[in-house]
Image (cartoon, rainbow, N blue to C red):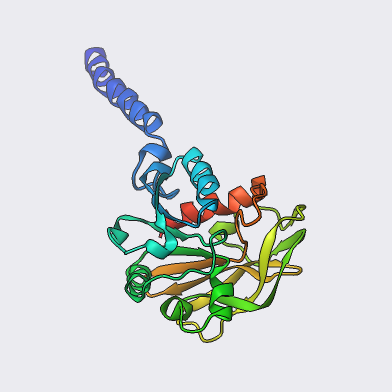
Amino acid sequence: MNSVKQIGRRIIYPIIIFSLLVFFGCSESDNPTSPTGPKNSDIKILVLKDGGTEDSVYSILNKAGYSVTVGQMYYDFDGKFINDYHLIILLNGVDYGQYMTDSAEIKLKNYVRDGGTLLTTEWMAYSIYNTSNIYNTLREILPSLYDGDYAYENETYRKTTTHPITNGLPDTLSISNGNWSYSKTTIYSSSLLTDIKVLFRGDGSGAALTIGQLNKGYVIHWNMGGQYRGAEIWTDNVKKILTNIAGYSGAN
């Protein structure tokens, strides 16, 4: 009987040890089906340049481990290889006032509809407000629009909802920078997007960070003007907003 027990132990113990090694050796980051989502390095991002802001955006996202490509100037974008990316960031805060071709806009709209995430920044809504007959297609899928005013000054933002993009950020955050450039924006009631949410509302800037859904994809509008005046705008909290948007794009 003792010999039978010893044989049983010889069989069971290796199985237990192997199971423990498998369990502790495979962390969530190694598991492609982990509920925490994909690794940052698996999330591909295209940054369309505005002639200045792309350098800091690239640096922040690259340091966070994302796969980042800096593409053409936003007004030269032709839509090639658009579906290779989880997130497209459309910057236009430095060389603003230019426009994209109708074809490129349509490709961006279809990209969102089919599951991509598009992040627009100022001066996108500003350009739509001040110039007729440009960005007609992108206008349809923006969650918020310029209300006719803007500022360069300190601003306080208040979290308005719980969302993955606001995770790890304080309920109230302040930008203490007189060169902080932002437009004043409101929700766009005629947008084709559904389930539009204000993620952060600014005391002066209104619907500062908004998101809405188009079929399978999302459009996020952030009403900050980037490196428009050449100042360093990337506080830790502002960087966190950007990296959270990147992570969200890969999880959806």
